[in-house]
Image (tube, rainbow, N blue to C red):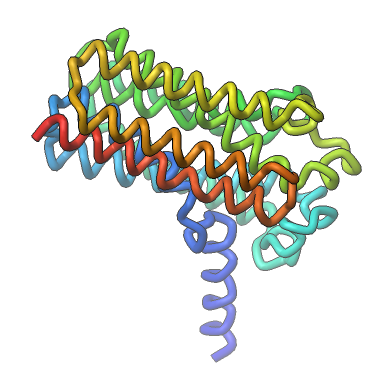
Length: 289
């Protein structure tokens, strides 16, 4: 019974450190990957590619969460939102965290081995970005930019694999997602802004200061501009453009939520971005029917 209880405890720790109990990060990674996969495949990604990129997103997001908690293990206990994370409470040890990280990277590598060699080479960049991001907040006020690149690199891999070429459209989608990621992760960082200042952790939310809401709005407008340009280059019709209009409405709603910089409402605004990714994907999906 004791061993069973220990296994259950470790399983709870595993779910927490990989954030499998909080799938919002998976959604935010998966929707843009699907944007690129659908465009690069002209609306018909193979079951193999769907499986590899979907499972790859889940695994790499989990690996990113593990290395993030490992990097922050000495400061998470000082932040209200993270004080119960498994490396703080002892559910998972630092050695176990590194072991989980290595296992997840190995699983992701096994998936990539089923793809082209050129895609495999691109995956090295993905690993570097995912590993580097958690440590950037100690040295730069732009960790969100590194996160944006990490969250967007799968889109480049999708084009290389499905289209055998990284086109202008691919880079526009990459830039759109980077800008969007910086915007919503700045909103996310606004939740912890005061705690981060006290413990010396850097973020765009701290860097932008009193201009945070305006800069977030500007980044959201640039995101829509890049996505609109993609639609023009691909000659998309009204379904896609309607998706962008709805996305603009969602961005406006987020601005209302963060207007007073309330911690809970900022977190609500961050979560709302799941719908932006989903709406844009629906627009792309309909265009390829």
